[in-house]
Length: 113
Length: 113
Image 1 (cartoon, one colour):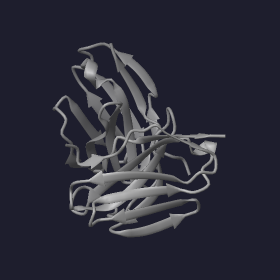
Image 2: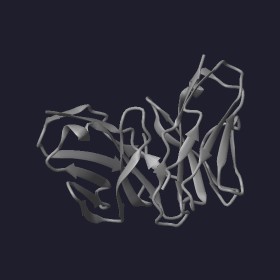
Image 3: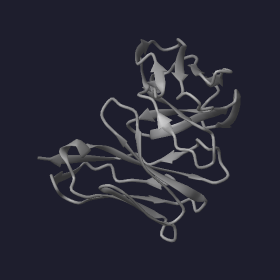
């Protein structure tokens, strides 16, 4: 079983919909949680970065972390066709290297006009 | 500010050959890491360098190696290439702090024939 599980999708929604993307993990030592967006033939781009549990909002994006359930979510409000991409969750523990992230396999999102 | 630059962007090699990939981090970033991305396994951590020292290594065979120079630029080398080494190799840089964000380059796509 992988340390981080993420539904590969694809997830297809109409423009304007609220999108919910999720990851579950098994390592209780994870304390830093990230969401990356990756367009085709591009490198991952950091969207959200949270530490420990709680919510964080940035524009149309909201990240939630529930450490008790080992579950993280990314919500996208008023989704746009330009949001069509692969969304990757990533996480790391406090005592591993600063750049040693464990990634989910990514969820492909398709937003239709 | 220029982003993370990786060269070459695309390359084709045959089994048994070796390859060297280059990464120039964001100016001022002292930490560089490398990831392998494949459709089946997603992003997997290869290694992390900080101030020319390898700080962390992933679970890859010894054929995969890397180094970092005094100007923070980094190279990774794969010797005796196998078909399974075909992947997108991504470099990421950060300031090296505990809460530092990782910024990825666009990757070098390696095809092994």
